[in-house]
Image (tube, rainbow, N blue to C red; front, side, top):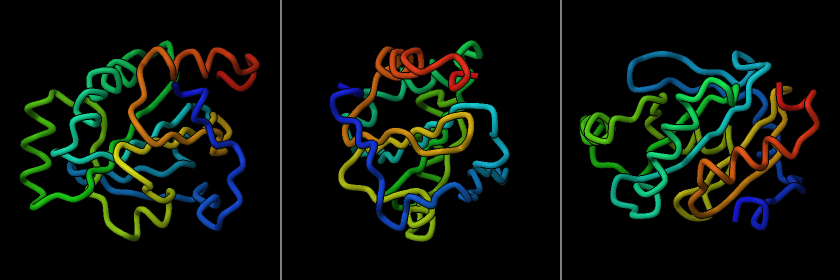
Length: 153
């Protein structure tokens, strides 16, 4: 699923997301440069989106499994209030940073063609994959494992 839907030719202006900077609901700032040396998975989601909710446990597992050398950042879209998002994240025991999405954040990272939408950056900070639709822990781990050892650091 992840491999079949990969979009490796990223030619639009948003492909310059290497400089993204976002602030999570706890007030912590996250930059792509700050995660150099790690895989970074940015996932757009919404509280009302069934496929988004179905993938949250796998995203939590990916983020919590330190062997993957991967960080997950969730970007919540289409919400009524920040409290709705934080309460929901707490109820789902989301352990990764959650950002309240805005048009400015979407412009930094990449377009949302549907929910969920996921972007994957390699340890050098280059966007290497994109998927519209849910991802699984297995598909992400398989994708990372398929890369040369130097890219998996």
